[in-house]
Image (cartoon, rainbow, N blue to C red; front, side):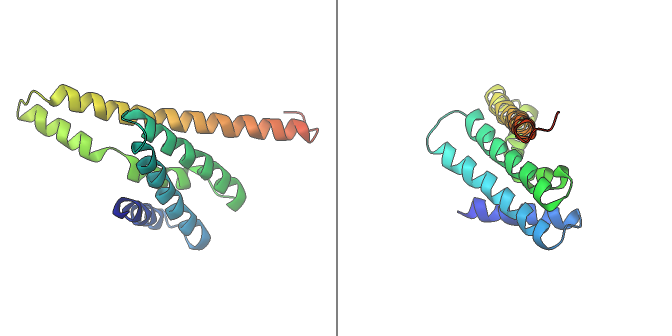
Length: 146
């Protein structure tokens, strides 16, 4: 629970740094908390380091794209602020620390961190693709040529 609250305030802080106000700032913070909630929930059901990040980044990307269209703002401000809490900073730090201390665990930590980062990238790509396809489908359905 503390991770979800921390993600809310982390995304809120980055939203303030990007000078978001009002509804946009609150939506950004909720988007960050939702991503962390999905990540924590998925970690209960899988031992894969990539799957929770992929699912969380997918949900955050779809929500950020939807919020950007609804609130008429760039998707980047929602997406960047909401993805910051998902970045595997602890894994990066531990990998570098083990590498500097010549620990034998470095390769394992590096592979887990790269899988987590790859999950974030894949989730963003999939989410963006899904939203683009849904938008194209909706435009065709309304009779507009894409």
